[in-house]
Image (cartoon, rainbow over all chains, first blue to last red; front, side):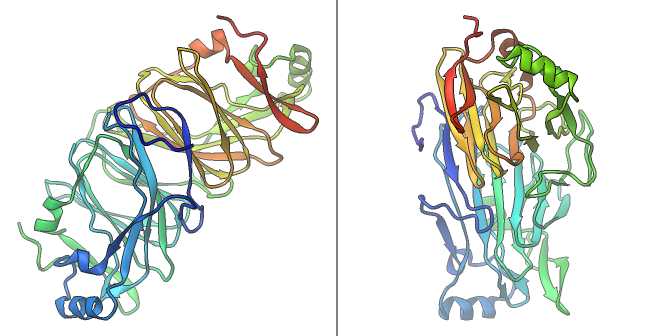
Amino acid sequence: MNNSSQGKATIPFTEIFDLKSGMSPSRPSTKRLLSQMKGMYTDKAAFDSDVANGDPVVYEFYELSLPHDPGELLFGTSIVYPGKVGEEYYMTKGHFHTILETGEVYYCLSGQGFMLMENPEGDVRIEEFRPGAAVYVPPRYAHRSINSGNEPLVTFFVFRADAGHDYGTIETKGYRKCVVERDGKPEVIDNERWKA
Amino acid sequence: MNNSSQGKATIPFTEIFDLKSGMSPSRPSTKRLLSQMKGMYTDKAAFDSDVANGDPVVYEFYELSLPHDPGELLFGTSIVYPGKVGEEYYMTKGHFHTILETGEVYYCLSGQGFMLMENPEGDVRIEEFRPGAAVYVPPRYAHRSINSGNEPLVTFFVFRADAGHDYGTIETKGYRKCVVERDGKPEVIDNERWKA
């Protein structure tokens, strides 16, 4: 049963997300093309070239619609595809919550990678995704999923329905760190373009 | 990394829950024996006999410890074992949230069964669990997981950390409905012991 009413009492419903691929059999996903992530990857030449040569889907995710109420929860899956722009792994834009004091849970269904997090005070944290890993993003941490593997990184996420997404802050400032592949291994380096 | 601090800023951490069995490699679970569910099954003679003959574990689950703050989320897995007391399937006690206006998400990892829900106004809802089904329990609904299959019913759950569990109301009154096996199939019947 589907439920997308706003401002009415919410009734129970079920959504299907394949446990391996994360895909819904009934719902369209939101797709993020590489061209929609301008300025987020370090290697600008590689970015421009990759956009010109096919503009790949970097990630997709599902968005439900529920009342923006602090007692409701939103959930879905996120699928980050394997790939790199230059030496930098494919990743999501990432976001703060508009209501900063709200957390989020990401349960990894398949693939491998990292959750890169930082709070406004500059505390940077990285947790590792592998199948079965539930990563807790506490209140106040911006968070970005990064795929360092060879297959899609699939996570099931849950957050408060009124939390909201603040993409602007982190799009403008960038994250303090990047995750790149060097000598065939993931490495965390400073983001040279980070703006204090 | 583990984090069980109360009243301090929460930092990111990861918990592992096996995607098939739901089990944690590092954490003890909370186990519910049949004897702890006195009065919840219709067939009292079968209940007494099953308790006397081994008192099986009906279900187990994991409990984290985080600040009881509306911005934090608690999560874990629930494992309901296959079995019946008389014709009634193994199930959890079920609960309302102490803060009634808070929902919960259950994502089914393996097994099959039902989520039985009812709100204080008497609206009864049943959603089906199968691998990949994410069942949304909206605010105000008591909820009980029921295993109608032959293997453990494993779900990954998330709820607001301050929601709290009110077992008492539903223990005293019972649910309006039961799920039993008749002619080899699950059937929803009125709970003859329900107290208005």
